[in-house]
Image (cartoon, rainbow, N blue to C red; front, top):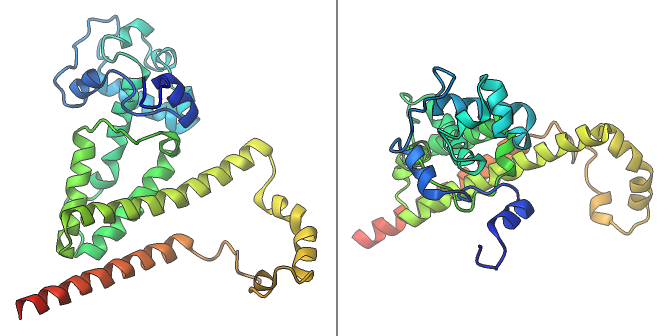
Length: 270
């Protein structure tokens, strides 16, 4: 039961699958390696790691809805009941899948730390965007209450280590991470939604906008929208890199804050 009186299942159905909606104690045991069962199943070599790996692969290829214990048993060549010796169900499996992929951006180049906090933000943003491209199902999950495992904490530890040179207060460092991730997720969600619209309708982006062109041209000539009518023809061109533009503006904004705090610190010392 949630705070608003709905069941966890109802909330999950409305908002998309939610992390932490299963047996939290069991998820934590599995994430931290304190509760993995050896399992005496008919399939030698079956393990929790193999189950999570297969689940991520299915989600990457076909979406999260395709992940089920029955489907995974087929992928792994074992009986469905054998999987339950390792993980209670799909809700707990989702917690394990999320922790698995969250650590990927930081595992790519662990021995090459960025030169400074600007480089850390740049790497964080690009790594997060690439991770969402590899695993688009992440955008469908309600992560408001994530069950934290070792990969998630390791990622946060590395992110905070790279940002320490900013000289900001701890809550502000978390704010930097939230701002960067929110920007990246917003852009990634727009791209994913556009691709999904093409797949669902069979209508390309170019064809979609071509259908609207006569109406938009008449609207611009009507005089009712003078600002938009006066904009350059390449205003909405896909050649403009919105990700690069937004990322650099974020870094510039944080740079201004860091300089402001350094000046305040110097003034207080004198």
